[in-house]
Length: 156
Image (cartoon, rainbow, N blue to C red; front, side, top):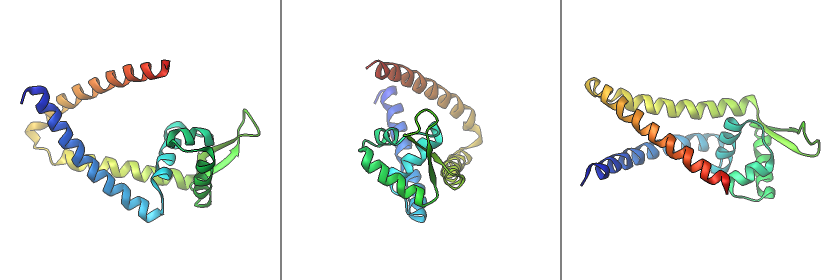
């Protein structure tokens, strides 16, 4: 196995473990709050992008506007999001997180941070500097890839 293959194997192994742990955390929150995957994705999208329309949510989920509207209505009924008139078009509705919705998203983000913290705390002290260097290189490479990939998809 060459160096590139060893790096890829290590990243795959880490990503798999981290994904399994993240999914377990997310599943617990979903079960406690009676939320679906689509609802979680929508809440996270609104947290990142701010208020948005039904069609943006539908596009994010790969669903129809009608299905997304029903899903959002359940979030409204749960008190996690609210609908308001768009400032640009009074006929359109903007969907945004309520305080309760923001608190739930913040809990999900904090759980992920806690998971990362626990993993880092498990690292031997003498290996932390090398870990920082390696992760910094990976993040730089990922950013370059993301930038070139986004620019290519943006043009099409």
